[in-house]
Length: 383
Image 1: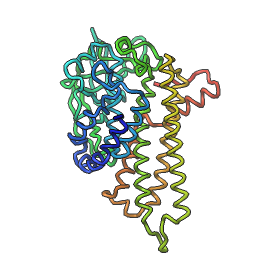
Image 2: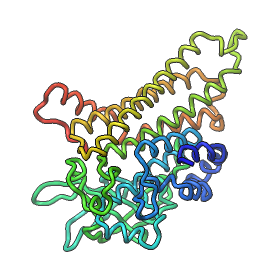
Image 3: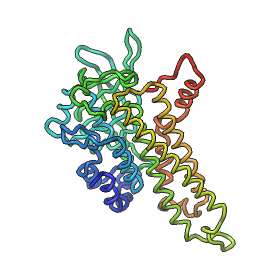
Image 4: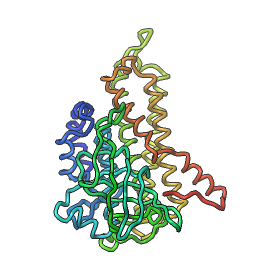
């Protein structure tokens, strides 16, 4: 059975667990275990560690399906699911330390470079605070981002910390994506060896990475920034699909003044048609770009900076348009949707929260794409 079939099979269970996840402010243990045991979280992990090493398309469609049923579970599936893929690009020593005795061990992340890092003998001293580390309570490590400053300039890097090198601050009291447990990571000064750090400049310029020597499959030739962006966008579009389905169900039986069935209202019909078209177009573009990226990886072609900018612009602009269409539908929903326990309210807040992620902001990508189309001599860097 494929990951997509499995996601559809357990969809009712995931949906039923949404209330508990919101109350806990993290995924229930049994939901996390399902995501892990079925293989969703390990879909992009190298097969040599027992991972799925599936195609990018299968992973994306899995995230979409899970997000339809449960936006929080879908978000965690997308974000945490990318981490084994990134770790597969690290030196084999880092992979063995994380997975050698426990291949199912997962780590969370917080890439926004809000902490500090200094180069020392054999590695780096890292400290600081990082927010929005989704799924961290169920993980045994974290990848954090920091700017390394030195005589040769600044460099954005990832630093992989093990569980005994940080603490989790339980501050996830939010309106949307409550079940993701995206809490703060706090790090007193700690040492990170060289083999547990990688440069995002190396990712951006498609340089050979040590993990590709032991994980030579096409999956590990894909560009980091685009893969991470895809996981987030797939979650948003899956959640939006679930919203539209539930909105249609709720509105089909609603009566609006002066006693008219909402299903017969031309403006309502137009709103739903517009939203469905926008969502279908976004999903079609996502699939087209995913298939293009996969073919490039099969052919050993490294995406250029301009191509990365275009892929990410497509993703983020699609999510912007879909989120706007969801807002239009929400304004046309029952007045009772203002109540916190209304099924549309939670899903609406989940989508709004997701769109606040820094990696889903479209403006920098518009600059990259627009500048490229106009032949700018200083193309925008897409990290």
